[in-house]
Length: 386
Image (cartoon, rainbow, N blue to C red; front, top):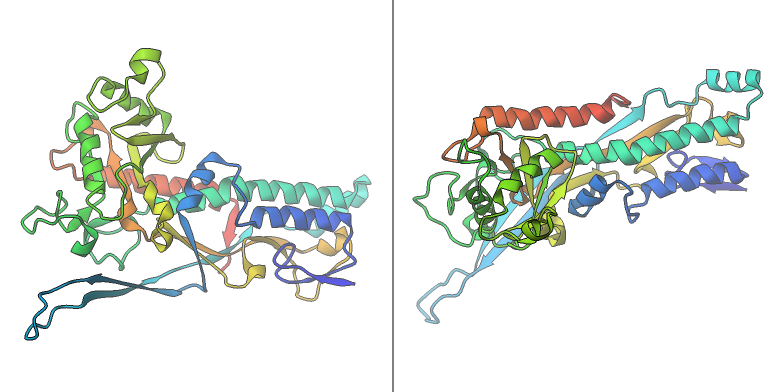
């Protein structure tokens, strides 16, 4: 009896009389494609709650609608403003990829016969290796490289993706507004989330206070939810701050580094570079469509995640040799930062400090360079399907 698979071995192909060997492959692929599974990788586990999935094809338009309500004097001759509506849209992108050197080519099966090896073992070994790479390298780096997108300056909130950079936002998302404030300064509606430390002496407590104050000007950001992600080297810069007011005494008493300063919690990660700290509003994970990263996937389950696709659509998988010519594919997927106010970068390089705390071109280039590096970690093993 045939069995239809939902995107496990193939994109909806038939499997005749599946035996234990094929069930192992199906189970492995189902596990790695399970949306509710807890990632094994710490960096992927950290970023996953901030990813919001949308189903659609490349170029899908998602709409945004918000409104403010107002009250006015209760007088018959007055016409109070009922509500202020805001409409806008996102254009989301996705692509498919196929694995280099990860096909079940004829040479592999030929060598199996010559060496007297079981082809099932070779297929499982290759499948498990690709799944490990997809889970621990591809998915993680795809998500983080979207995080390190540096948009061009200016434009509206919805015209670009990535953290805000000299972007004018609606005053309704801020607690308080000063129309005379300098662009990028506190209380200004022109927001810039690419900052640097103030003094060439190095990271100071005032820099942390500024980031916290800047973040908590947004009405939907909980001041107690701010997270700081950095490498062990970058977070080491906080050692000089342990004697400042607002920090914990844990380090001075026990010699163990503090886990928070002024209510900001720290996460050690290898994803950023040593000169850049990444601040994230943890409350974004509870904000529904306001999550930081939007992940666009195909609306059809069999075209989601990682799959093994045959060389032709009529393939019936009956034994290991029937997989000949099949390739691993990452089905349509695209990551983009759409929760732009929930993400902020701080350049802590002393040589790039500035009194206005605006990140220099050198700092922006460092983030872009890191994005390119993360891309190369998975794209060298994956081919984009044109």
